Every structure is written in structure tokens, then in C-alpha cells.
Length: 353
Image 1 (cartoon, rainbow, N blue to C red):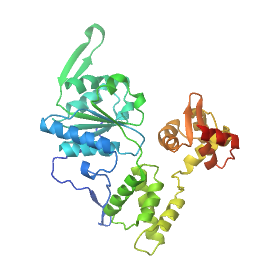
Image 2 (image 1 turned 60 degrees about the vertical axis):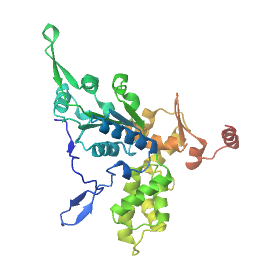
Image 3 (image 1 turned 90 degrees about the vertical axis):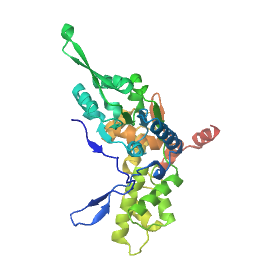
Image 4 (image 1 turned 180 degrees about the vertical axis):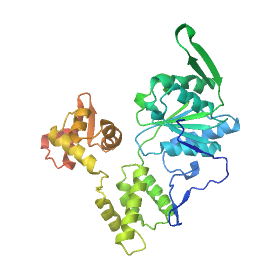
């Protein structure tokens, strides 16, 4: 069975803390995700639209329309799936595209859903075409057509299923087929977060982790978080660890935060070792580009998928690279960051545009 997790949200507890026990019987907080829309920071238009859809479907006592979230990793796609299920007081059934390998996997998954369940499929773009087609009738008519036999002996068996809401998440929305994409009633692109939103997220997480941190340190972490809450929370944990080991102060200040992140190899722009290596390779090995993604991946000894999904979105966002039909190119700002001397004619040409 391809189900990875089932979460029962029928209780009235809206706590944002998930308390676990470690081997020493000390409680520690593990889950920093917001549980309800009121706790969610950022993506204001998406949250407002979801709030309307959730309330409207609840008033009609019916399943919410199917939802598709797309955007770079770490921006809250999985969190919003959890929030939808919590707000609807529905069970959340979690699986992923790669785990749905055979038609029987899909039929078994869908036939076991209860009325009003939220089915979350991560990496939905990785569902194979043969399996994907079984979702068409399920999403539109809440039934599954299963074909047995072949040729003249083929027979179609129709199984009615309970009404549910499918929430899909993808970093590669262009890889979804039109028939599948068009069956989502609500489609949202999640964009990078601004400094104010990231600072609010870091403050909220520090309260959950029981960490005292001043505003300057919060701002330092936010500046280096690449506009991504997942990275902000990861850096907060690393700063907390560094502070615990290397500082006698009760509060984390900006000096401690900076030292901790420098130790992690994260600079003031939020770029890490792989980001810098990517820029330097494109700037020096390929004379600033254009260079194809497969060539860059081979040079860096990294998966091309990693470069496209993890490295490039933020470099594009801050204007250090551009994508052209002939390949990737470093911009003037990217060359300056990489320490490559820029001719005045090139700099002036940039200002003209």
C-alpha cells in the first residue's frame, strides 16, 4: 500500500506543538509547522483564497475542490496540505508520486478513503502516465474505472469511491499533463517570502523551541534564508546549537548568529557552497555561459534535478543568472559576486536596460 502517513484531524486540539519523548524522557518540540490558517505567515493571497474555499465547502457540507500547489521547495506546500485537512477536520492521507507505481496502488488508495478525506500527493509530477489516468474519473465523478483482461476479453469494472479532496504538490508544474492539471479547481503558485515574513516565522519558531533571540539576530537569519521558511527554521536550529555550545549569554545576538551561519557556509546573500560552486563554474569554466544544465551537472557532479529545483530558483530570483534558449548565463551582478572583473562597457550596457 503506497500510503505513507494518515493523520486524524477530528479532534478539537489546534495546538501548534508536537511534543515527542527522547531517550532521556525529556520532552522536546519537533514540529514547527503551523496547524491552522490563522498561524500561517506569508502567501497572503493564497491563504485568503483557501480560507474562502474551506468556509464555502464547509457551509455546503461537501468536499473542497481539488488543490494544486506549485513552486520551489520549502515554501509551504506540504504545510498547507496539513492546514487544509486540519481546518476541514478531515483525515489527511499522505503519499507521493513515485510510490504510485501500478494501477492497483491507485485503486487500493482511493477505495480506502473515507468521506471528506484529504489525499495529499507530494511530487505529483512523478506519477506515471498509466497510473495518472485512474485519477481522472476519481477527481471528476468520484469513481474508479479498472480494466481487467485484454483485447476482446477486456472488461471495465467501475468502483464508486467516497468524495475526497486531492491536494497535489510539485516543484515542476510544467511536467504535469494538461488533463491532470485541468482537473484541479484551485491552483496556487507559492513564491519566495520577504524579510518581514521570514522574521515573523523565525520569531514564532523560536517561541516554540523556547529560544531567546533578539531582533538583529532574527534579521541576520532572515537575510540568509533564501526567502524560504524551511531554510529559516533549519538555520535557527543551527544558530541555537552554536549558541548553546559557544556562548554564555541567555539571548542569541547578531554576532553569534553570524558566526553560526558562517560555520555552516552560508553567506550574507544566503548562498551556500553549492550555490557558489555553481556560479563560479558557470562564470569561469564556461566563460559566463551560455551552458546547458546537463553540462553544469556533470561538471559539478550533481544531479541536474537538484540544480534546477534547489539551486537555480533563488539565483534567478536575486538576478545572478538568467535562462536563455541556448543555456544558463551569469548576469553582471553574478559576475561581480563571483569576483570576476566586469568591463565598464558591459556594466554601462546593463544600466541602459
